[in-house]
Length: 308
Ligand code: SF4
Ligand code: SF4
Image (cartoon, rainbow, N blue to C red):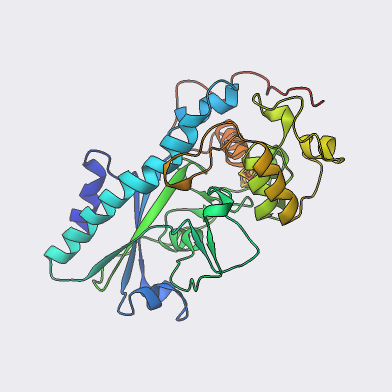
């Protein structure tokens, strides 16, 4: 069966990386056993995020491509189709298969947020024991390792991929466990965040949400010089120096809007995941990524705008 599943890679818009973990790599309390108690194998289908979708924000020229092509289209269209294909192969052979994608608008916490989503479209306090830990599960499937930024890093694309899963009661030949060797703790991810939202390898969700949406004026060509007029701390916020409370973050997000939201409530990213971009640039410079390009991703010194 693994041969047929691996053939998905050759299909149009097939996954770039496929990894399989036996259920024994997961703790007995892991959500996978609540989602499908008879799970014997977990299959991870990973898709490259096109390097081109990062170029616009890198250069400060075009912004919406990143959220549409690197997030929304992959999560809402491409990956669901491929999960169905994968699950159909398994069910044709007489086993049960269940696709798993991120439930972006549901969270158990009542005081947190998901920076990729409009904060007021998230259903909080919802019993969410059925949500897999995506990063940890992908690592268990042998696809990559979790970097200091919290992102999954692979040998092919560094931090630039998105992924989904299929759970099944079939025993499928597993992929070897991944031995972490990519993240070198350089700290470039944390340094690149325009809101200083990464501390000790953890992203503070509300801080991230405000700066993902563009709160740092020096990295936001759309920001008006009259932005946030009623806030005494406006300069601190616009420079990315203020540690925001959840209430602050909501106020900032409500008052900085540049692009309409993308379909399915995805907020348009203005930071363009500078943390992942910096990581990618670092790993490319080190020459450790297997997928090589003709030209370097970063072509000139990073731009910044005046904060006033
Ligand atoms: S930027 Fe450096 S520290 Fe951060 S995840 Fe990448 S390799 Fe690790
Ligand atoms: S760079 Fe963007 S996505 Fe990354 S932590 Fe900072 S605000 Fe969040």
